[in-house]
Image 1 (cartoon, rainbow, N blue to C red):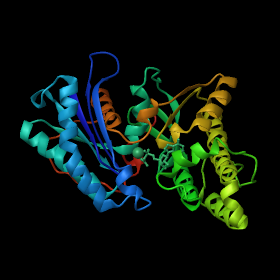
Image 2 (tube, rainbow, N blue to C red):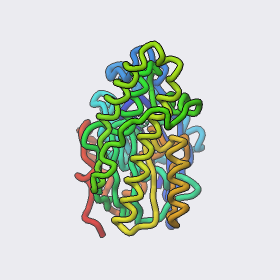
Image 3 (cartoon, rainbow, N blue to C red):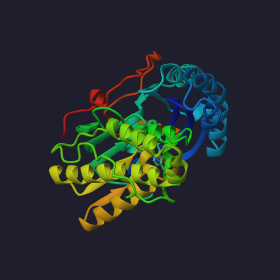
Length: 347
Ligand code: KG4
Ligand code: ZN
């Protein structure tokens, strides 16, 4: 079965084609991505209307590229999958509209995919794919969650952020340091030249006894520190960046280890944009190796939004039989959508 996946929830247009197999995981045949980062940079963040318009311009050319690269034609597609939510309403509507139109024109069913399930299952695209069950640390721009994953569609929320997401903490701290958008990678690059212990920043909820996170206070602490530094900020920016990154990473690592302990599982999967962070990977690798825990990541280029994870999640859902593609072609996108809503009871 050939599954085309279209991602357009935010500032990346992604299209991919995967093929399911009788046994084993689906394989990625081709994928193409257009990032809008440059376009939004002038505004310091994503402008939703511009994002939607750009998705319209990119999605069909990207689809043509993917089909050519895979050596397939549109008529061979069996299912057209798209990101149904969560994300920017207008941006989601572009992917959903194109997917449903394509499905209707080809006479093929469509499937709306949860963006976070895409991230969650993206490590299955890597050569070092995980096996169920595992603990997942989902760290994207808008979400920070720890989950127990027992199988496709079997997700139990263990803890999540009560305010800002880790990605948001990176982005907002970077913004107030004048590092532009998107802040995470820029802050992380600058941090390599700084001392992570230079400033004492809070580790929110580190000892809360549960698996919830809170990052809003950290951003305020960074702001206070930046104000205190005044003119000296420029010279100490790398130190402040390194200290901010260290605070975020320490909380993510400690809570992930606590989740592994509570669940008794010995496998960790990290997914979402912040999963590309170097120190997070290094510290998780070291901590997990010391505990006999296997840790899996998506390929670096598939950490942030892409079409491959949407095609993969759709293919895995179809293969596991938790959902069927449909021919209703009713693209009711869900800008706000909790992953719990599509999760089955733990097995
Ligand atoms: O998963 P994603 O592409 O989009 C959402 O679904 O939200 O994640 C984007 C987030 C942004 O907050 C970005 O700053 C962060 O991931 N990010 C990073 C790194 N690369 C991306 N944060 C820290 N270090 C990085 N290397
Ligand atoms: Zn994402």
